[in-house]
Length: 118
Image (tube, rainbow, N blue to C red; front, side, top):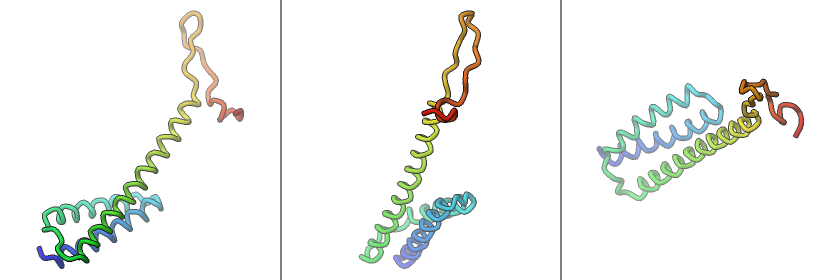
């Protein structure tokens, strides 16, 4: 593999990372899974490539790394938001209550948020 080949693969990877971000932003799951698949293929190719020698190639590799980390943070923060939202709504559901005889009593569902009281 020549350095020109590695440089071309890095350019393709940078473009894929940008497409991945747009697909995530637009909630386009088909495009997101396709870009993730293609990104994995490029990463496998680049894993076997020799390290970049030229300054231009190293700067491009650093840019690709930074953009990939940016996407990783986007996905992490989205997951964190979803987890916090689910945890919030789980707190709104009252735990099961039992009567004096030990049977389960129907409780009021929905919590304060869904009942309109805060």
